[in-house]
Length: 173
Length: 234
Image (cartoon, rainbow over all chains, first blue to last red; front, side, top):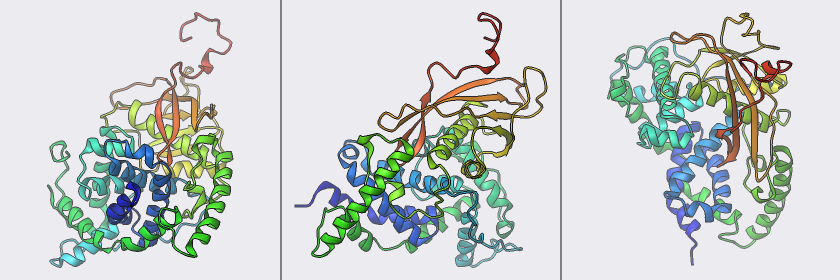
C-alpha cells in the first residue's frame, strides 16, 4: 500500500521540477533542488501533512532552499560567466519564439529573489500575500522586489523596445 | 497587465515545459528514502543513508542544530552549487536574514519600497563571509563594509549605516537568538538621522534561516556604557 508521501511525490514532483527549473534556469540544478527538498520533506512528512496546504509548504521549501544555496556562494568563488547581454533589443521582433528566448535570458540575469517573486506571481499565480508567506517577507517587500525586477528588465538592452508602462499598485495584486 | 508582464508570464509558461521529467526524480526520491526499495538499490541506499547521517552530524556541529533537528536531507549532505566550506554558512545566513529584515521591515515601514540603495555596515565577520552576506542581500541593498561606523550621537555620521553585533545563540532545537543588530542611522526623504536598536531571533526553518521575531528585551545599548542609569537615552 502506498504511503501518503509516495502519493504526494508521484503527483507533485513534476510541478516542483517546473518551479525549480524556472527558479534556477538549469535542469540539473532543478533536479538536485527537488531531490534535496523531497529528502527533507520525507523526514518531516508527519509535520507537513498536518499543514493546511502541504504542497504550499513544500513549495516554500523549494524557494527557500534555492535562496539558501545562493547564500552559500562564497566571495572567493569564481562565478560562471553571466548570460551575455545583447547590445540591441529583440523584444520588438514579431517572432514570439525569439521574444520568449530573449525574455528568458533577461530573467536569468535578475537577482534570485526578484526572479523568485516573478516566478511565484506569474507562473504559480500566487497573490502578493501568498508570496510574502512563501518568502517570509512583508507584502511591501514583495512589491518592492517585483518593482525592481521590472525596472531591471526594462533597463535590459535586449528588452529596451518593450512598452514602458509603469507598474502601478493597482496592477500588482 | 502590461506587455512586459504578459511576456514574462508567457515565457515562464513555455519554458516550464523544458523542465526535467519527473520519473527519474520520483524514483530516486522514493528509493533513496526507503519508501520504495528495489533490489540492489537497497544496498546502495543503505550506504547512502550512512553517508547522509555522518554529514548530518557534521552539519549539526556547524550550525548548532539540536538532536531533534538532524535531517538526512540537509543542505550539507547533498551537492550544493558553489558551496565553499571556508564560509560559515550559519553566520552568513543569520546576518543576511537580519539585514534583510532590517532593510525591508523596520527601516522605512513594511510598505515602503524605498530602502536605502546602499548602506555602510560593520560587524564581526571575515572577508569571505562579508562577500557572501553582501551577495545574499544584493537585491535588497548594496553593502559597503567598514571597520566601524561614525558616532551618530556626535553628529559625525552622514549616511545610512548598520552595525552588526555578535550572534548570541541558544541552540535549543535549532533555535538561535541573534542579538544586537543596531540600525545606527537612516536618512531618507521623510526621516532625519536617528538610531534604531534592533534585536532579532533567527530560526532554522524549512531549510533556511529566517526571521522569527524580535528579541523581546532588545540588544544592549553601547551608548549607555559608562553613563549612569536614568540618564537620557539610557
